[in-house]
Image (tube, rainbow, N blue to C red; front, side, top):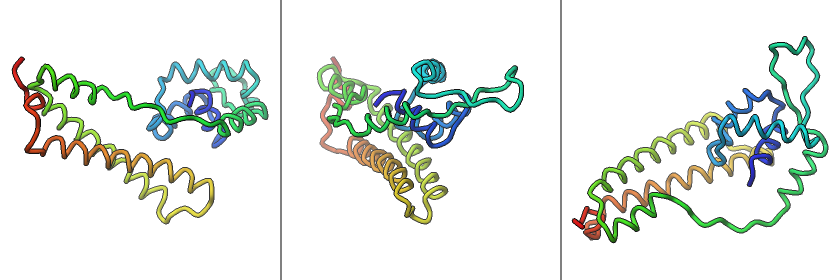
Length: 185
């Protein structure tokens, strides 16, 4: 997945200014495809230059007014072509997993606290996803587009549930290897 495709998706859902788009990323797409505000603004310029989006004509003088963008047919075609491409799953690259592996050989007295911290972060994220589910998807969606959006949210809920279960096991496992408990070097 790439940032241009995420932006095209968001703009097809609702034409937006750059500021509105960054806020929407912070509240939705950013949960699974994060980006800085600078990256979003830079990509908007590239998409406009490539003829995939355009700034909507302003009803008022442009000075001090935010540009609102919409997707052009070339942008819709680009997004549709990208959606149709096959893509293999990507390997997991999680620093916590690598640090645990390293702790197996060098020990890590602070690892338990870090595991607890991660557990709390995943619990908070799950609670946030559950609030979105309750607010936006109750009752269960029936329209195809809404079902697809809900499946993305369910993926987030399922991933957070996985991490909570896995971290709980890592913290509660009585047979925990000494390296995880902080074996001296």
